[in-house]
Length: 456
Ligand SMILES: Cc1ncc(COP(=O)(O)O)c(C=O)c1O
Image 1 (cartoon, rainbow, N blue to C red):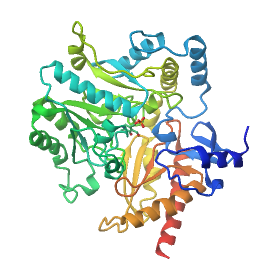
Image 2 (image 1 turned 180 degrees about the vertical axis):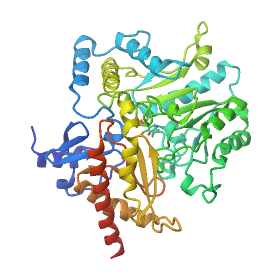
Image 3 (image 1 turned 30 degrees about the vertical axis):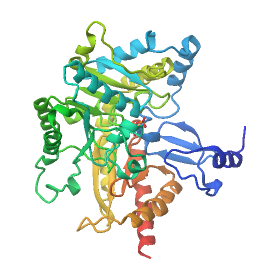
Image 4 (image 1 turned 120 degrees about the vertical axis):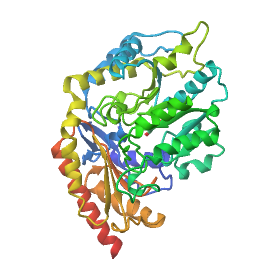
């Protein structure tokens, strides 16, 4: 086994981190996370961190769950691999049936993938083939929202509305259209008004009419939009979206790669926000990250034309519904049931919000928004005018000042600039008041020190 210094040297030479700069840094600054327990992880030097991001919005049941590890080991010994491709296997069947039980009543089928972007790709293709089977082959476009993140493969990236990570790879998959998101704090239509006018929802209708309804297959919306900093839907938003989708024959996809499995306090995020989707994409929390797995929940209506003699969804991936991952998901869902993790989030969400609200007196804190165990804190230069930081200032604040301080304080969270600068929080669902206090204290210290540094 290598020492920490050796691991850091090797990482410097051989690891190509995702969305990470390759330029050499001081190897001693590379964090090698080695072990986890509950809401905490430890690096190879033994330093403790509160995992305020659940890995990457993923480790719902917390770290160190031997019950999930044992279920995986047992499955690997019995049948490590077989595809859900021509054949089935017990774990894939058990998990599909369990998910059908947990999902909204009209959703009874699951198409498994290995992760979130693959789920989004599968949902888009499924929507396109569904329309073709209905005699509408011209419906190939998909609508998503500005700044929303849906993954990095070419189709999912086309749906992703973050210009900075798209433009390098253009041309992307054709047919992705972007509309307004639900950023109430900066809404071009009604931020200054007393209440939301739902023009953000109407923007979807405008896009459908502009493109031609006969060309639009689906709309992809997260229950709470992650990128940009936890944009919650205004009251009535998803009801209006459903009306629009029904009127123009467009399928509604709830991208719940983050928002499913208790993140918002319900098993599926759509339940919490009153959305009635035709498809749900999921990944991350499905296994709490113990093994890669994603999937698409499909409504009976969308599955129906595929039930015809000789029909099939023309799509597959080798590891979709991997037996070991399905075993991990089943054990994970057993933990959800035994510990009522969704109920726990509902019970504690006000305390989480309350802890974050203690930061509202800091001049740099513009907005605190989210729900469940999923919050964003938007940082501003001037709270009265809501003036944001320039790109350069934001970069210095997030990467130069805040991130190292939060890390030093032992808090893992995300300082994000895919929209305006925000701090993102999404702790494991086992976190409670002690962790909320630690999150608030660490952020306060880091913000106060960063403000002093910025103004000096
Ligand atoms: C809403 C949403 N969709 C899709 C994805 C892509 O998932 P993956 O990274 O597993 O491909 C993500 C990843 O964070 C996401 O947040």
